[in-house]
Length: 585
Ligand code: ATP
Ligand code: MG
Image (cartoon, rainbow, N blue to C red; front, side, top):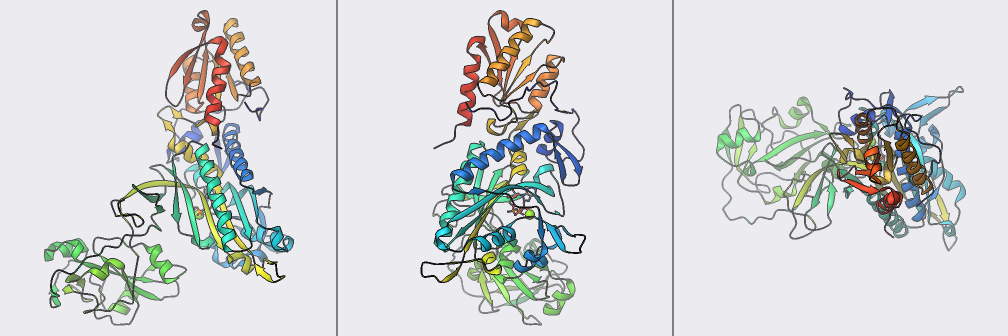
């Protein structure tokens, strides 16, 4: 057993666990409700929380797992400040790009600063001053630190806070293939971290978003309340965030003649389903056309098979736009001359790019809007009736789609909570901040970077979201605030108290993190609280059991109740905990 981190006396009566019966009305998800009810956290302001003793213990337990695995992977711990000067953000270009999530303020001399939402700028500045030679790399720095992001909708407790604890790491390498190795090391470390916590998770391919860079994976804890939709193949290892998931290419050979294009009247039929039903065709035999605008007012038309959904992020990435917006009615009218509901690529009044999903390439004799109120075309075919600027993968995948990577698999859909994110950054920040080194020939080269984040509080919340029942939290042992508790059934019975105290001390000496429930309360009250706060193993000491030389041991996760002989109980408990904490080599 390991030596306990907290060696002090852990008497429930002297500790601070303000549990409540009522479910707080402003807590929407179970983990938030339970963290409040278990007395782990208390709100100070929107998205800003006090970590009460029990909550902090879980947080620290998880941080330590993260630290062990970061150190094991060769990352070096340091600590950067929360307050960051604006100049660095102006240098990287993110001062204007980051928007309102960045909390900015001025000091007494009117110099501008922000509260760090992430630390690429600060670490790159440190590295450009200190790293001169290829000999000093690879390097990977990490920290466990408080971030601030002025989230538009802080919610779900620690899951989406404004102030929150993150582990962030940054790797520095001489070239792209060396950076790939650093990325792989972090990826593997993340796999170990979430496996050690006993979480059901997936590592999924993800969009790189505003941090930039070339490729990334998100680590998703599976939970119905998750904000992200993810897909995974039921046959191979492919898994991706739905924002990014590649759609399979349907190939279809034309088995009928191209029929002549025909304009038909479709009075008041605007949606794909209305039009398809009215014309007696399946939605798959229609094309829907949508107009999108950039923040500069550039317009494009996107074409999709009628029953498919557009993936705005894919379209935005394809176009290289900073932002993508639904075009306004005026913008739509300016390029189509038509009201919404009848849009199509034939007869546009202004030339704009037409981006079609790849599936459209194989469609023919289909229904399209005619850019005229109450009018559609039938028997439209790309190439003959309208030109497409470019075919691209712009649709959102669906459950049951064929896997884009293997021959036999189908995609399954899940909800997930993003607890970690790894990015290959390439030279995005090192170039902007001019972080260079001298190579073996003494030539100046740009450093290659990666960045790697884990939400500490969010992971603890996600663990609760995944592990609970109607009685409360079911903590996985590695991140439980205590491994076990000793509950004295009747505190007035001196024999019971003496036996309970003996077990408690013996467990502490054996390195078990144990909470001694010495409160003068009815056993039912104590059991309820122990269940609520998620104590994995409960040892109940009562006069009846003692008379037979036994104590009762209840396993929170399975509900299993064992009568264990007093003599061997410390060893048995120690073994159970060791087994749960054991990390794979
Ligand atoms: P999200 O899409 O959920 O906003 P993000 O992409 O902004 O996350 P990153 O910048 O990759 O997140 O941050 C790294 C990790 O920090 C995330 O994987 C997540 O676990 C955690 N995190 C991000 N934002 C928050 C927040 N507001 N509250 C708590 N944890 C957060
Ligand atoms: Mg975010």
